Picture (cartoon, rainbow, N blue to C red):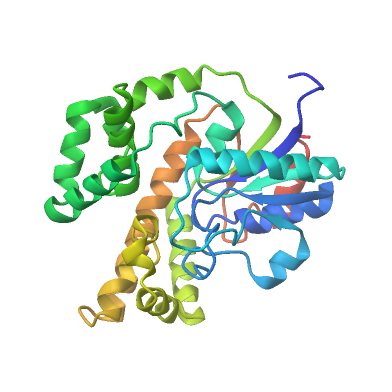
Length: 315
């Protein structure tokens, strides 16, 4: 890497792994500001379900790319790269270190590597047709269509991640090129930044799952049900495919509608969050630019300060 590249840090890892706390400590130690790398925290009013930083955390260190859009606004990976690059330039211009924090691996990967611009591969009418097909025929039928067009991309996407399945189909159908082929081109692009990516990992998967369970219980205490009901009443989930598929909300729909007990919905949210954490762990674990730091007990790697000390040694 050359000295001409902008220096930045990133804190990544699965949900409930402690990314926010570590990023704040690093920002305070390294004179930095935090840039969110989360596909849902950009939306205003979706606070508890997306585990946004608390008011105290937001005040402790300047944050960027949180609460920038209404919850029914469309937002793509390309949009994120554009906004993140602007935020990085802004933070750097003031002599601060940009510190990305979040678990949306696709956003981080595209930001760091650059690559083929796929924003032109967009057709809102086609996207709506695919969404209507999913609602009528189900996730299995939608996924089968992707398998027929791009089996390699299908292997990398969980069938229940409807938004990504639809996006992969859209790219294939609009461009005539497989999404997996575009991804291979992107993976060959040189890194854009002088970056240090810190990935929180867990030797004991049950430790992470316990943290997830505690977070879900806290979300319920903080008012997740009321937040979900308010968003439903405002028609957010009807207008936004992204919001309606967000983990943290869709699991509460049956309870708000009187179709299931709160206990059943909370259990499903915990299961969904664990599955998501597993996918995130796999994603970040396969990236050669992630410096893995292992969390091996209930209090982090002995203490958060020790994790910060280890992380600082990367700079």
